[in-house]
Length: 81
Image (cartoon, rainbow, N blue to C red; front, side, top):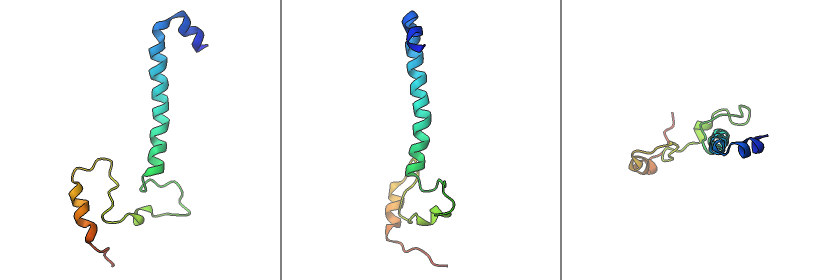
């Protein structure tokens, strides 16, 4: 149906192209976030506190403004309370 519609009116091809790319991006970016970010919790049984696995020197932010801050914390010990 889409192919015959594009053949009848070729000006609609960019519309379908960008709408399809937007749909793919809308699905793939959340999947990327689920795989790579430890603070997003999906499975509550096996690891209910994933933020406890993050080390003090580990950067998990999307945009790192001051990378030297995390490098300075690398030599610090984890506090015990």
